[in-house]
Every structure is written in structure tokens, then in C-alpha cells.
Length: 143
Image 1 (cartoon, one colour):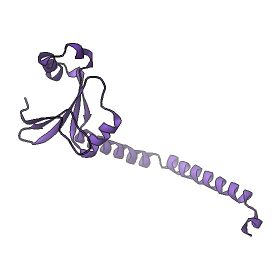
Image 2 (cartoon, rainbow, N blue to C red):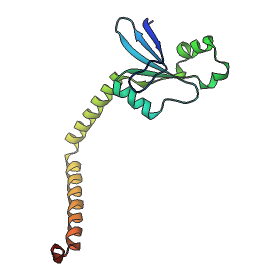
Image 3 (cartoon, helix red, strand yellow):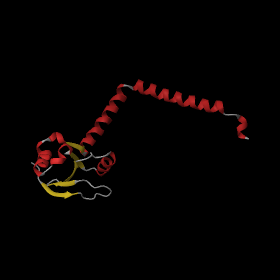
Image 4 (cartoon, rainbow, N blue to C red):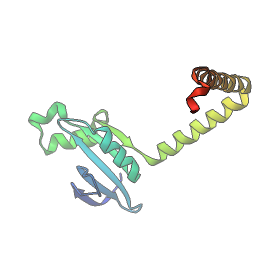
């Protein structure tokens, strides 16, 4: 079991305020904990979390908000994993980026003809657009 060296309630982190910030002992790793009672974390807050690169989880306690006490909160946090989800994990993002880059490279090496065809289609569209502009242009427009 992980040990925490610090727990901060609603700390200000520049331009946003997570519900809880914990610091794991030893690693000095910060983890944000968002408690969803009436609404989940919105896209703006998620982008701010990602920008800072901090691990973040969300615990959804909305179904028990009327009867919430410390015992039930403890169950939601530690005994019922289905109530929690990762909002952001820097390592997962790194693996996703590596996977996408690998897939793109494989596609490019396995499908050079398709890429060439796409380039040619794009060039054709650009040429057609230029031809439309030239067809509409009248030499007397210069004077």
C-alpha cells in the first residue's frame, strides 16, 4: 500500500483548484483527486491538468451524495474501483504518443502508394481551385 506524505485540500495551482492534492512518500509524486458530486471534471479543467503534467484521478460519488459519510467515502475511494477513473497519467500519454508515432511510421512504410495518391488528389484540388480563380480573373481588373 502506498503511503502519503502530504494531503492538501483545494490547493490553488495557478489558474485552477483541484479538490485534493496528495503527495506520495518516497517518490514525491503529486496526484490530484477530483471528487465528482454534482458534475464531472470539464474539458477546460482537464486541459489545465494535462498542461501541468500531474497525475489525476476522479472519484464519482454522485449516486451516494445524499447519504455520504466518511465510511462510505472510504469505500468509494478504496474498495469500489468502478467509482474511480484516471483523468490523466503522464506515462499513459507518453505510451499513446509512441504508439501513434509507430503506427504512422508503419502505415507510411506499408502504404506509400496510398500516401502518394492522397498527395496527388490534394495537388489536383489545389490546381482546380487556382484554375477557377484564373477563369474568373479579367485582365482589365488591373487598371
